[in-house]
Image (cartoon, rainbow, N blue to C red; front, side):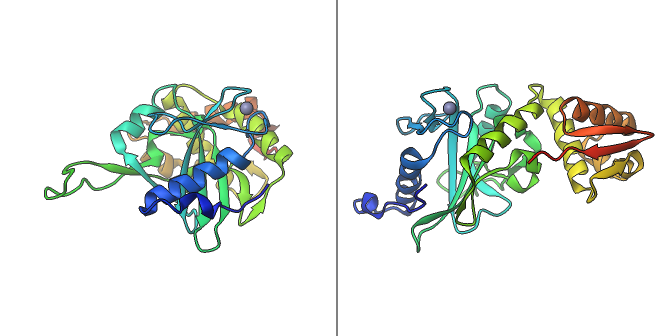
Amino acid sequence: MDLRLNNKLISEYHSGSQKARVLTESWVEEHLFCPRCGNEHLRHFQNNRPVADFICPFCNNQYELKSKQGKLGAKIADGAYDTFIERITSNENPDFLFMSYSIKKMYVTDLIMIPKFFFIPDIIEKRAPLSKTARRAGWTGCNILIGQIPLQGRIDIINNGKEVGRESVIERVALSQNLSIDNLHARGWLMDILTCVNAIPTDIFSLSDMYRFEAYLFDRHPGNNNVRPKIRQQLQLLRDREVIEFLGKGKYRKIKRI
Ligand SMILES: [Zn+2]
């Protein structure tokens, strides 16, 4: 995969955001395979479509690209908060591609794919509304907190200027499908419990290790007084989805497959 951005494409553009859009979108169209089915190319939609930027002509999966200069970091700025929330609460949500690039060196430094079902309202941060004197006074943008998405949902395609093998990308995307869940409330719990499991440093852990997250989980789900039963229920779900296995006597093991 050629990681270079094509400088020639932007000679006629003046605005920085237009240049960035042309550079990054044309790179995806020219070089990126479909992370779901492995098809050689993705097709670019016409500009200004409200939902997605790219579609795979083979499996019809849709993708939206967000890019930023410099490091990818833990959050990425996006458009209107309400629109984004509306989208992730509908089933029309595309998969997301997050890219960072170096404008100095003109190449792609990082690219991750996040499958649609890893998005929950909690990872969309509301920015302060624009001030009364602004042209779009009151308009409220958002940040996508990609750092809060469990690692099972952050699939590296390019990492620090190095390409990850195509087969391994497709395998990880397929595995992540195990965690797909439509109901947004249930999805929130699953993602939170997954984050807690990931935070435990050892592969084998106990129920009491999980109960240490009780206060954290209560904070995330105020009003739920049954956090412990919920933890046990979600651990069963993670077992059914082949993320962990039960060893008996309140012990569990993380299943590491990639
Ligand atoms: Zn495809």
